[in-house]
Image (cartoon, rainbow, N blue to C red; front, top):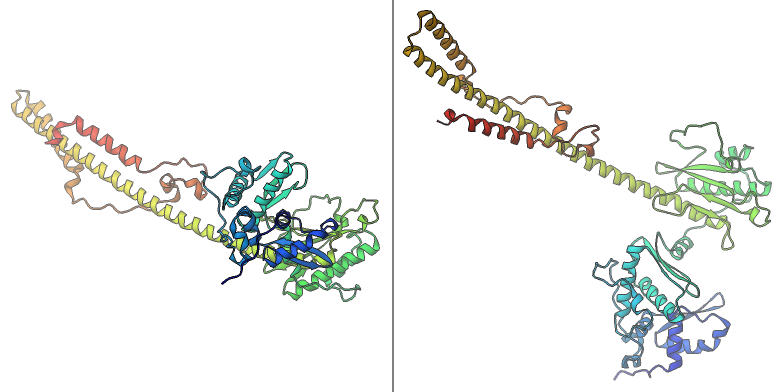
Amino acid sequence: MARTSPPLNERQRSTLRLIGDGDDLSGDDRVGLRITARSLASRGLVTVRRTGGKWRATITEAGRDFLDQGGAQSGDTRRASEFGSPPRQQRRVLGEDAKSGPGLSARTHSAAPGARRQEALSLVERLVRDRRIVIADPDQSERGHWRKTVHYAKRYGLFPDGQFIGCTGTERGDLTIALVAGAHPNAARKRAAKLAPVPVPQRLDRLHPVVARLRDDAGKLAMSKPLRHRALLLLQALAAAAEGRGWQVRDRSGEAEPHYSGHRRQSEHREGWIWVEVEGYSYQVTIEQEFPQTLDAVKSQTLKIELPHTKSGSRCRWADRKTGTLEDRLPEVLDGLATRAAEDRERIAIEAQEAAERQRAREKAETDARSRALSQFNAETLYRQVAAFERARAISAYCDVLEQRIEATDAPESDRERAMAWLAWARAHAAEIDPFRTLPTMPEAPEFTPEDLKPFIAGSEAFGTEGMSITHSAARPQDLNMVWLHLLAQKPYFRR
């Protein structure tokens, strides 16, 4: 028979809630609660660890589920392995029928199972719509509830891909929750920690030719001698590491040089740069003094490295900070270059695919336009033949009537002769314009020029045509048909 654990007492419950709110019990005033935390860890509700001499307590999924269920059910006598954590859902955005956010119930604890998940999903939906939520100076109860909702959304990955939830004012003042594009800084730091370090030389010997030319150029890297020496060492480390990866290092881009207007940027003489070519894509790596005009002794010794900005918002700037120097950031700089090359390669592939799709659409539009133009050409040929047939029939009917009048008239012989001459010419003309003098066949298709096809391309401005009025060709045959039907209605003799 399975052995059950005793229910949690009030001290254990309050400690679990405290850890669930983000308190890791690392403060000196939390020493008395650490024994309780170890008791909760034995049940699998929290995890405790000591890293670098600091105590850290973190709530587990089982502990979070315990709090989500209210912590008052009989299930609190079970071990943590019996707590079923909710499955990780695919990241999605709710429909319009979802709640606008947890604001209506923010001051009350979610006792019903699954209520916090619904509040987290509603929060994410609201963030996707508004991007930013500001709660004006909430009380501690409401502030804690919002923190728990944000934590739940983070833990189960309910936010959209390529974005993360940022939260400020969790302790005091206005609480701001925002949906931010990019990778979370913690994730970026964890990824950076796994990168291989880049060795930095101690002396300026055996320099890369590009770095050597930069060293000898007095118009570049205008700063103190020790700082300039360090900047050159950093560029040498980047150049060596880049060539170690098979990349090319140059002193200028292989692309067309920009036009020089005769004016230099104010800070250009303070900068030094190299161009790194990664898989055919060239990027400028710039290093300079971060605060060249400061009087602060510490700030005046800081350097920064910049890469070109990207549309994806990838990191493009690194500088000396208390958490790490530029020597520590060089792996991230190289990784930033590789990331840019991958993004550019993907962008070029997408642009090529879009260009191919536009070309296929253009060819299809031209084929359809040619078909419509040919159809209209055939229709107009037919209308001309039918009109000629109608005129020939009408002239023949006229000639029949004229011949009867000549036979019945008592006009002078000269008038009769002239009338007979006119009758003969009219019959000859009717025979000449009669389309059935030869067997009518499909007309030979003409060669259409691009200008001929323009009126038949629907939405032709999407294919780069300029100054063209778009006309759908189907309207023209319909207009001609209406004219033809109108003519038939006015000529009853043709119907017979």
